[in-house]
Structures are given as structure tokens and as C-alpha cells.
Image 1 (spheres, rainbow, N blue to C red):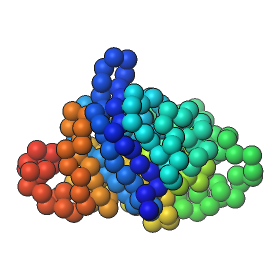
Image 2: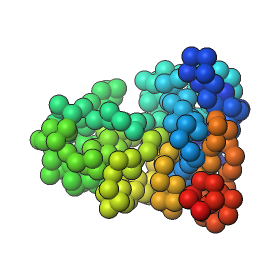
Image 3: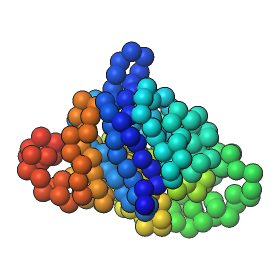
Amino acid sequence: MSVLEMEDVDGGYGEVKVLESVSMYLDDEEIVCLIGPNGAGKSTVLRAIFGLIKPWSGEVRFRGEEITGMDPEDVVREGIGYVPQIDNVFGTLSVDENLRMGGVARSDDIDPIIADLYDRFDILQAKKGSKAGSLSGGQQQVLAFARALVMEPDVLLIDEPSAGLAPNTAKSVFDHVKAVNDLGTSIVMVEQNARQGLSISDRGYVLDQGSVEFEDDADDLLDNPEVGKLYLGG
């Protein structure tokens, strides 16, 4: 069953059109990876889903209910989390304070949730009193994931989790993404490292100039010679 759908979405910034009739879907407990060249509109797809930009036309649906143009705080309450590529932690706050910021929209006790996150992400337990700005890039990404999970979302939108990271650190971050998915969270991930992103995904979409050019199972996209030549470096 599809937990998230986009249908014929157009959108952009000001008068600049970025998305052209974008349609895609995400099933329960699935990882979908969006790949394509810089400027293809991948991050804009996530922003349109999360309400950071309002689609010009088309629909976004979550569990069958339309959420097109809903404000981000309401999207979070519906059950969708978002991890942006940059500025995704509060550098002057401690790790623990960052996690608690992730639960400000909850009215219940978040201590058990945070305790569970420390169990799942042991590097955060070791750094809980440290300022987030003192963490490595990989550790900051893990903190950003964990903070988004405080709201216990059904869907997590992740924008370029490996950006700027060394290969070994990027692999560790991808392992964390897969671990989050294995516990039942569906994920839409934008990733510039297309091969590595697709390797942990169930399906993928290739965007180019704001449109979906290819859609397939992740393994089939990796084996597609045209996709390989144009988007995977040959």
C-alpha cells in the first residue's frame, strides 16, 4: 500500500518552474531514492512534500489524504519527518537538547523515546552532553536522523545524507538509514552518490530538468545501461 503519493506536481521558486508533472509513490516500509544531476529538482520534491514550498498544481497525498500545501508543522503532526541537507542540527545546543527540540510538538513524555534513540544510536549516548557543533559531519547526520525520529514519523524525507562526508563515514550513515527503515519507517532519500543510495533502496526515480525520466526497482536502475551512462558515471 502506498503511504505517500505525488501526482502531476508542478512547482518552483518565484516565477522559476523547477518541477514538471512529477508523479511518484512510496510504499510502506520502503526506501525510495531520488537521483539525477544537480539542479534536477530532487530536493524540491522533498520540500514540496514537506510544505516548504507550495506546489503550483497537482496533489500530494499521505495515506490517501491530501496534504498539498499543508504547513510543515502540520505535515510533521501527520507523520512525516524531514532531514535537510544543511543546517540540520542546532550547533550551540547539546546533543540531548537537540533531541528534545525534535519533540516540541508532542504533548506526551518524550523521555522514553529519547532513551530508545540513545540505545539505537550509541554514538549519541556517548556525546549527549557535547555541543552538536563539535560533532563530526557523520555524527551530526546521525543526530539529525534521531531528532526527526522523536516524533515517530511513518515517513522520513532525507536530503543528501552523504553530502560532504568521507567514503567510510558515508557508508556508516547509509547503514543508519537502512537501520531506521528496518524498524518500519518508510524513507524518501535524495542522494548524489547514486550507486550507494540505490544500493540500500527498494526503488528509485531519476529526475532530470524537473521531470521523472526513469522509474524502476533500484537493482534494475543500477543495471540499466542508459541510466548508467547518463547518471551513474558510465
